[in-house]
Image (cartoon, rainbow, N blue to C red):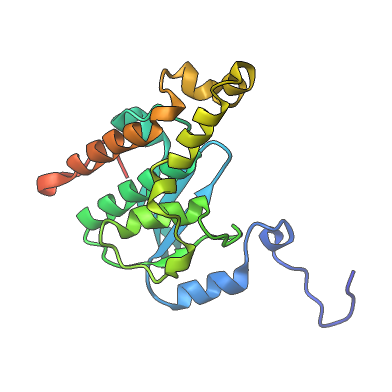
Length: 205
């Protein structure tokens, strides 16, 4: 451990690997709202956050649980298609509130090409919100729609035991993984329709 009169103990969240304060400072100094995208094993959370003197203020929030509760999503909520739909939902909520731009904040998530955080970003971008980004990081449309999952399910369909183990959540909710792209399209249509004609969608946020 470093010692000396000039040494200071890092902030707790930095020691725990939860916050990169140097990156956070740069985002705050931009004076623009932050598009904060975070993922857990089972869910995706997308928020528009503004830095205020008293601390961060959440302007808009979307959680993948809303897809299940309000829009009929039956597939797992932590996958790539769910990330896109959660981003789409957040972007639509932001546009209703007059928010037009933000800067991306993925925290300590690795900026891997095609990752869930960038699927969520693509959802936000498709609502017309301006967020500086690199196009090369965004997943392609087939993956966003879940085509890779559907194809993998078809490949496993001859191995009943493995198929059932891998896709147990899909089968429990009575949505065949092979039909995920169609299910995605239905839910996307429902999310967009909820905000047409100046509507505010369903639920809070």
